[in-house]
Amino acid sequence: MKLILSIFASLFLFFQSSDLESLRNSYSKANLSTQNTKDFIQLADKKTSSDPVILAYKSAAKIMEAKVTTEKNKRKTFVKTGATSLESIIKNNPANTELRLIRMSVQENIPKIVGYSKNIKEDKAFLLSNYSKQNAALKNYIKKFALQSKSMTAAEKNVLK
Image (cartoon, rainbow, N blue to C red):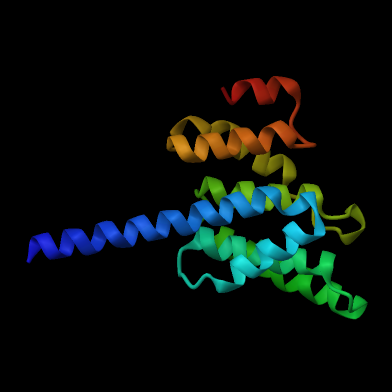
């Protein structure tokens, strides 16, 4: 019985991590083109999970829908819905580094006029102070984000080695 349970748990963790990797990869490319944005939104919409990180990517996808929608009156709704959801997830999981990374990247890339950029400094400080505690995959992901980040200085990027 223990063997069956451990096999089931292993398979669950494997598929959970592959879901997360596919979301990370798609998210990191989403701002490169409209098609990449649409692909990320589609991928995120297909994910069903109660994992806060996957839910945060789904929230980011909702915000990104404002970028690609042709219905101008829906843009504000997409941003508000996604941002409210993302803030709620972070409030319930304040120590999760990847959630802070997602929020920081959203806030860096959303037009300033939207007014959703108040947590960039806080999230950057959180990422820098908690970087060493993360697993290798997340460290690599944070480094990739930092290299293209508009908010991180060269000195801060060097800390993430």
